[in-house]
Image 1 (tube, rainbow, N blue to C red):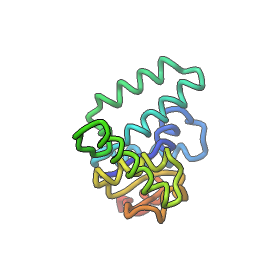
Image 2: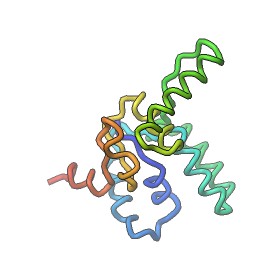
Image 3: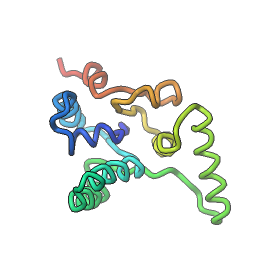
Image 4: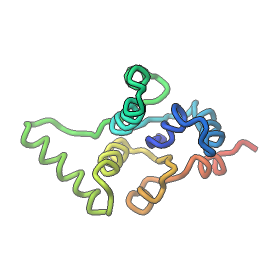
Length: 151
C-alpha cells in the first residue's frame, strides 16, 4: 500500500498554484489504480489546514469525502483494546518509539499508523521528516513517478 502524506493531499486539494502541483497531480492520477491510503492524522491535518484558512465547509466536506472514499483508505493505528489504561500505555509507547527516532509527535503518529498497516511506500514532499526513520520506502511524488513511469 502507498501511504500519502498530508503535504501531497494539501497540494492536491488546496495549493494548485504550487510549483509542485503538476508533478503532484500526475502522481495522484497515475497511482489511482493502486492501493492507497492516508492516516487519520494526515486527514485531520489536511482538514485543519483548510479550516484554518477560512474554508470550514470545504474542510468538513473533504473529511466526509475521505472517510467514505473507496479510492483512498483511511489508516488507523492497529490497537488491541483490552482496557483504557492498556490503550494509553500502547499508544504512548508506540509514539515514543518514533519520537526516539528523532520525529515530532505528529509525524510519529502518522508513521505509527503507516507502519502498523504495513505500508510499503510513504509518499511525501518532506522526505527528511521520515527517511532513515522507518523501513518504509519514503519517496517524493517525483521519485515515485520516475520509478513507476510507463515506458
